[in-house]
Image (cartoon, rainbow, N blue to C red; front, top):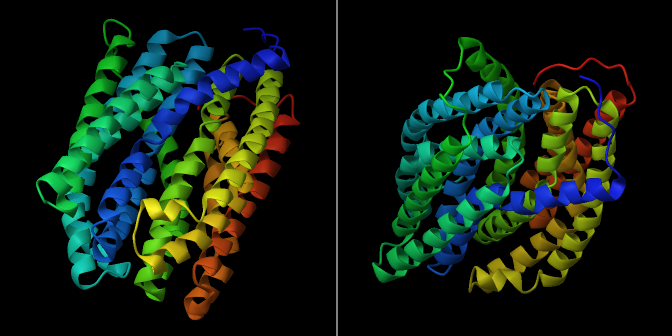
Amino acid sequence: MQPVPGPSMSAMDRRIIGLAVPALGALIVEPLYNLTDTAIVGHLGRTPLGGLALATTVLNLIGWTSGFLQMATTSQVAFRRGQDDPDAASAAAVTGYVVALALGVAVAVLVAVAGPPLSHLLGGHGRVQADASTYLRISALGMPFLLLTLAGTGHLQGGEDTRTPLRIVLVANAANVALELLLVYGAGLGIAGSAWGTVVAQAVAATLFLRAGFRRTARPVPRPRTSEYLVLVRNGFALVVRTIALGAALVASTAIAAQIGPATLAGHQITLQVWTLLALTLDALAVPAQVYVGTALGRADVADAAAIGRRCLRIGLLVSGVVAALTMALSPVLPYLFTGDADVRAVATTGLLWCGAQQPFAATAFVLDGLLLGAADYTTLRRAMLLALIAFAPLAAATLAHHQLGITGIWLALTCWLAARCALLGARWRTRMSRADHPQRQP
């Protein structure tokens, strides 16, 4: 197939923004669940909020590790659409659903059995540990639904449909808020009610994604070949290693906060949940980057892929500047939404100032992630994340040894981590796009 001329810059911007804005809904599924939990449970007191901090740290690690289902499925579907092969695109989507269901059952058992001991290793004791264990055991039931949601998101995004995931997420989160208020305060179930509300919302989301995905699948529904599963496993392995390295930095930051004290742990939980929501808001630009780069390389149009990359990075920096300014301006106010504890609010305010300041680094790293995912460069993504831990380690270790560094030391370490990712991924993307004759391959 001959390369197709790229669109004008204004048309390209419209394509990017048109896909990125509704993609935001699909990206913030789990963070919105967690943010809702934090706001509702936070008003129960410092102990339940500390338990939730440990539980969501474990669940976030599981969710991020399983994120390969969304990322790999998006790349596969987009690349095969670029090759004008709808049957192969449908087969890739069905593969994602089957793996998601099987893996979801295994993950549910893992969370129920290993989750509570892991939260204890992260610093949970007494009532904090008991609340974390309760939340994790109930949340385990939602893991198959969460993974099916990830596969469904990848299927629809690969087909350049981000509006349907947005509608599904709005419905699921409305159900989550209503159920949690009813169960936590109305029924007096406390942190257990919060967990049950999230599980039901995850089931609603999974059902709606399966329904929407089935409507877009070729008829008859293709039966994936063994090679389809092997491709997903191969790509997934590199992405899982990458995600474990990513989670290691964030889990370590929570563990350090737990060692410093309850106020720092609770304040860090608030900051981390806001950061996650903001980061994934910026990460919405990685979706068009991945989809359009994958489609362009599927039709062997390197020039279009490079142009899309430039525009995504520029838009990301512009948006991140606005997000950074708003976060820093609202840092004294936002903690009031989550807690009535003055000490926790003071810690969270400092954390949110650092959270805002690092948003340009976050935007650049996330967009570059999307570009290299579209190019199926999973090895680089894995290597860069592992190397970035070296930049995170010195300040993290210093904060663990000198507790007086507090929340500032934790978030300075995370800023160094993001900056290192930007440098490593940016160098690789420039190298790839500077070679007009670099080999193209299927993700």
